[in-house]
Length: 56
Image 1: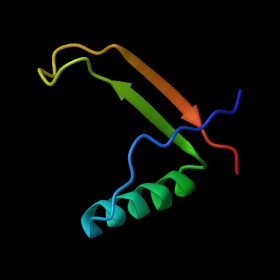
Image 2 (image 1 turned 90 degrees about the vertical axis):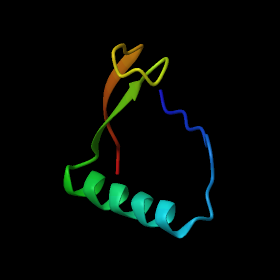
Image 3 (image 1 turned 180 degrees about the horizontal axis):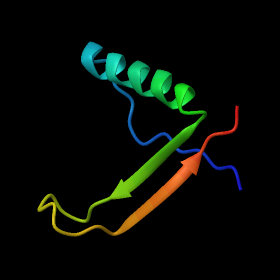
Image 4 (image 1 turned 30 degrees about the vertical axis):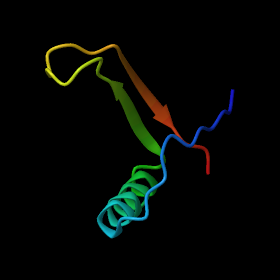
């Protein structure tokens, strides 16, 4: 299964720099990353957690 979604695009320089840092660190970890879904901003509950590895 290989699906891809663009959730948001940004033109802000800080966000672009953060995205670049994320990609560099993802590559350094051999594509390992995670996705955590929080239903609200309380920090007390989580809906889902996925550990993923990108194929290069």
